Image 1: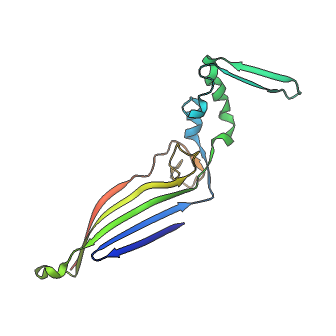
Image 2: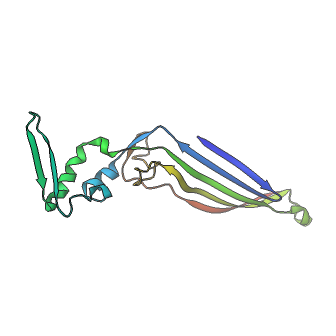
Image 3: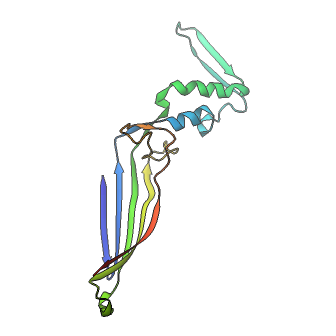
Length: 171
């Protein structure tokens, strides 16, 4: 989805573009590795005292196992095979572009023989306005590859934010 609008006041104009994507799910290889090495907050339990799990065996017998604090990394590393833990809602809304322009009063400079002139400040990829709270580890638009491998994220870098000035002159 996308929405754009343009506001004008005297010689000034302000244009913005907001866009988003909804309905996608992504598997994050970055988060999987971070989890395995104990980087996310979810891996804090057990670092001081160890982790004890209880349950039942496939035969129905009671089961208890304790990982000492020195072995907690093994406990969290074992979760690497549960891919659902590393799936995220990939919906997002971004402030994609803002352009502030000023139309120069070319009528006051007749010797230049200009039809029009304007100067603009242009900013792109300014902010992520919304994304799933669980997805705090990567940009929703980062990808695995430049091909059409959608739904995978692997150590992707965020989109580049750019700021610039635009001068437009019509003779």
